Amino acid sequence: MTYLVTGGLGVNGAWVTRRLLEAGHPVLVVDRQTDTSLLGEAASSVQIVNADIMDGEAMRALLAKHEVSCIVHMAALIAGLQEDPLRGLTVNTLGTAQLMDAAVKTGVKRFVYTSSRAVYGNITGRNAYPDYEPVVEDQCLAAENVYDVTKLAGELIGRNFAKLGLEFVALRFATIFGPGKLTRHGAMGIYGKIIEGAMAGVPVRIPHGGEERDDVIYVGDVAQACLRAATHAGPAYTAYNISRNTGTTLREFAAEVERQIPGAEIEIGDGLNYFGGDVNYCGILDNRRAVEDLGFSPEYDLGQGIAAYIATLKALGLAPAGA
Image (cartoon, rainbow, N blue to C red):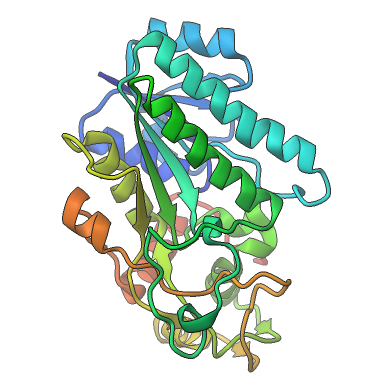
């Protein structure tokens, strides 16, 4: 049983690849990039194929050759989608459909789709400040921006391929932090900016958002969730929130970084919605479904996640951004 991880060299995918390897599973990585820095020593234990998921014929041949039983689909375009919606829809939506089609035609049993809290769209009302009532999976899906729409489309397409016999599971992740995100995802890596700025001895200034609570999860728990979804005997649902089920303010996050890195200079301004823009993604995701059905349980609290981030960056030999 081979597990294929698309985007398996990426910010989140590298941790999924490593976790599957640690569990003793044979892993095949498909990625358009060749940088294995986030995999570290694990890169020597995995087969990496530089391929494009848009090439349906090539993907069918690859799946058949390696007798892939499960796909964990991590690959996606993130940056620049608002400026080029067609590119985003083509790669993220059509590419996902191409991969699902290849999976069905080659007998792949399960497809784990990495979705996002973004499918819920603008978080408002009791789910937002100051109540932060946790968002459950059955709430209205109201994706707004192009990336959000592609993630929702992937879920809906997956449910239809499930009618053809493909076991489909979507994981809706809360806000993820982990090594590599700041460098590769830029402004989306605000938590990495706080940690790596402190590690580099650079003063960190975030102009606003210090009072906003958000559900923040370390990338190690993303990997755990993917492993559980991929290996579970029979998931009862097609969608699961993956989160810590708790809210943390940006100031609380910064305070923990300052505790672990004495001398860090971090200043967070007042207000809400530190991401900016007209869509508020901050809130808490109810993770009870994943806990009760998949057996998911966060392995990293806030302090442990930050400590793991710092230790992993050092172990991989990666300099903090700004150093």
